[in-house]
Amino acid sequence: MTTQPNSTQRFSTRVDNYIKYRPGYPSEVIVALAASCGLDSHSVIADIGSGTGILTELLLENGNHVYSVEPNAEMRIAAERLLSQYARLKSVNGAAENTTLPDNSVDFVTAAQAFHWFDLPRARAEFARILKPGGWAVLLWNERRLNTTAFLKDLESLLLKYGTDYSDVRHEKVESQIASFYAPDTFTTGSFENLQQVDLAGLRGRIYSASYTPEPGHPQYEPMVSALDELFYAHEVQDKVTIEYDTKVYYGHLSPQ
Image 1 (tube, helix red, strand yellow):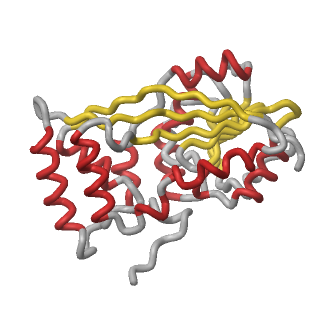
Image 2 (image 1 turned 180 degrees about the horizontal axis):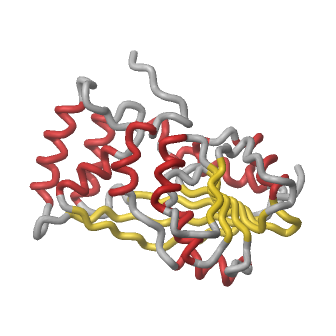
């Protein structure tokens, strides 16, 4: 049986594709947090599991001081390079369970596309520790639609067939844990359409960026590449296919448990 890398290291060989081909987050996220949580340019934010800085950059563009907390060295170094022009960025070698940040030091904790990798009881305690009184914990995912088009139905079938541990690591499996994470408080949800149009190189790169797809040398890699190319040509329109997402946002307070 192939040994899978732990959650900290499983993206180390996928950084380039992650940078080039992962979708961003819509600006409506910032608008919603401003309206509902009082987010403004003075808010101090800890972006946990920040990866290559996709959400971090959106927050920096909003004028925020952001601690980008990332345990994976390759992803953290890539983010430092990509976001070097932002004076309000502080890159931190830390993790959700041990951010290294001071008590009561941030107004918001964000975690985009990362919550499902955390040790949740330890992460919750750490978030509560670093948040200022009345601070907000915000969770985000780009949730790929599975069956709204024939292309997306076929893509899901391909991933189920070739993914190394796809069914085990899909983030939707932890949505039932969100309520207990925020308890005894409640939380609010939002959803925003997010469409990603890609050519063949973009589709390949997006799929290769996922931690559950086989890499070169794996016996399933070449068959997956062939199937992916066939999938693209079966569905492309003017050399593009559209990957549809719903950007799901969850936000609330973290009272002591």
